[in-house]
Amino acid sequence: MCFEGEKAEIQRSKRGVEYVAEKIYVYNKPIEPLPVDTIGKVPTLLDTRIRYRYLLVRNPLEKAIFSIRNTILKAAREYFEKNNFFEIHTPKIVAAGAEGGATLFELKYFERKAYLSQSPQLYKQMLISSIPRVYEITPYFRAEKFNTTRHLNESWGIDVEQGFIDSEEDVMNTLENLIKYIVDSIRNRCREELEILGIELKPLSTPFRRLTYEEAVDILRSEGIEVSEGEDLSEAAEKVLGKIMAEKGYDIYFITKFPFETTGFYYMREEDGIHTRKFDLDYKGLEISSGGQREHRYEKLIEAMKLKGLNPDNFQFYLEAFKYGMPPHGGFGLGVERLMMGMLGLKNVREAILFVRDRTRLTP
Figure 1: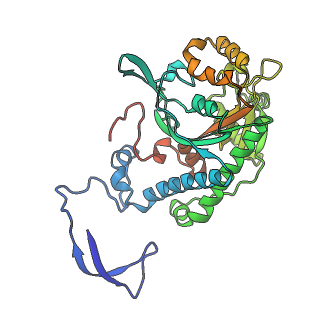
Figure 2: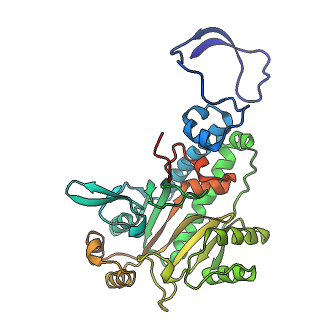
């Protein structure tokens, strides 16, 4: 439906512009009434919101979330263009997983077995020998059977890899500058949306606070949260750590120097063989990004794969790139929906994506 008319002399609406309609054109008549209240006067359950989101984005509250998502992705591309990163697109049907076999979606690829991509990790590393600064805005597919407020089986990420680095600090600097640029962009360009959502988005200052994995474990243990040696931090532990760090004035912070037992094979190990150059970035108690310096030495990669119980023969397409010389490099993956959860205080990751793919949803 559309109309012709003049702008009303008296504007009473706080949102948008009021018109006096002179002609109304109906393009198509519905055969059923709307199943949801798009005005927003009647509360809608999350399940219903997910099912009818294509209708509910007419509602200013719902639309504000996705307007902010749109601006996040625009701002990310702006940052990368300004900093000489090259946009790439990597395969989403792959022969091997980057994160491990337990969370792979398997599919039949003609006469062979293939998988949906968990991450562009291996491919973006391969390109670093020729293009030293790359990024991709990409879907992730994880066959995790979790049905929590933080997990999706199809999500979106902002992936980066950069070469000729001195340490993981170079990568952390890129990540924190990117997020600061995004947050500043949202604060400047989405004032109306933030007002609709009732959110006061705080500016971020760099550098972000850094604490080692061992320091994080000590903080948690001092609060009675037990963390086993060599164990990744649980969601419950992350939430507690987030509250403690917020009390100290840190909404966003890095956790660095993870033990090798908790990481992917591709992270560079320190000389002690115990710690790695992997980091996580947590925002209000929620992990939104992981990254670090990668192992660029062929023999060390083979050794790490074997220590992780992986067969190097399954990764020959990846390892071949390292035979020809690879510069020191590193990168990260930043979860778009999780970043939105941290920025907007969303309680469920499903609020941050238009069409949800989780443990129970395959439609719409």
